[in-house]
Image (cartoon, rainbow, N blue to C red; front, side):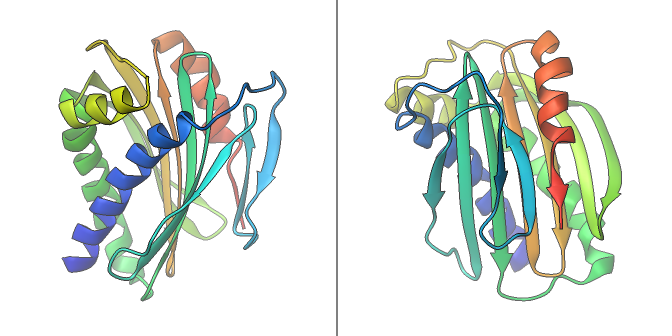
Length: 194
């Protein structure tokens, strides 16, 4: 359970760090950039320039994030390394718990509007979509950096994958269901796990 608690904190921090990193973003190009992690664990098509944030380890979890802001949308990918290998039989339960934690930590009266379990190159993944008004903590963190959600309904499309002691999460915060269906879907589909 301690690993789950630490992983939940890590997911919340990933979301917040993605928003914090936005303030450091320069103007992005309209071109997608294929980004491959230094460790070679994944690649993804980022929709413009991105900012890397190296995080301090949290009780055995080291996370690095990369974030792009494009128009009114935020795109973040994170790679986490856990101190210990996660037992294969525990992964589905952990993925489910983390998606539930995302609803509670990122939204007020948020809800899941889609979700499915998938396998990608040996990683067990959960592809899910959430919607709701951003939580006060998410709004406060974003306001510090000049981003104002104004209590608007937003959408979160996420792909969270775990294999051994590695986790990769791609997350898009989007202002409309149209962007969710087009830009959010293409961002998630571009994840290539290795």
